Length: 170
Image (cartoon, rainbow, N blue to C red; front, top):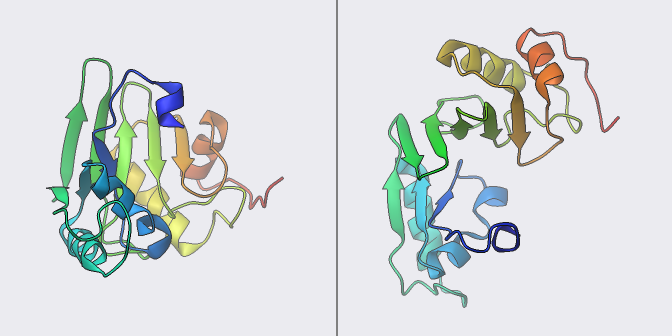
C-alpha cells in the first residue's frame, strides 16, 4: 500500500513497536527485503530468533537482520518528514514500547496502548499511556493505532483530559 501511495519514495525502515506476535508476524518479509528494523534491545533479540527459525520465506534465516536500536529516543528524518521514535517503556503492556511522533504533523502512532473504538479507553494501559504522553510533553492532535480507530483532535483532547467515554466501534 505504501508503494502505491508514494511509489517514488523508498522504504528503508520498519519500526517494531514491541515483541508481541501480532506485531512481529511479518518481520521476516522486511528482513528479506533488506529493511532496517528499528526496535528496542529486547525485541531485537526476538527478531533475531524469529529470523533463525527453520522456515521458508524471504529471509529464511540466511540474512542477518539490519537492526537500529532505540535506547530512549531516536530521530529519523529526510527532506520532508521527521519521526521521533520514543521508548516509553516500561509500560503495563510491555517492558519496552516504541511510539512514533511526527512533530510537524502532531501525529502520534502507537500500538496497543489505546485501541479507540475497540476497547475501553479507561483501562489501566490507556490511562498509563495518557499520563506518559503528558509527562513527555508530546504535542499531539491525532493518535493513530495499529488497532482501533484514529483519534482526531477532539478525541485526543478528551482522552488526555480523562473525559473520553468508552466507545466500542460507535
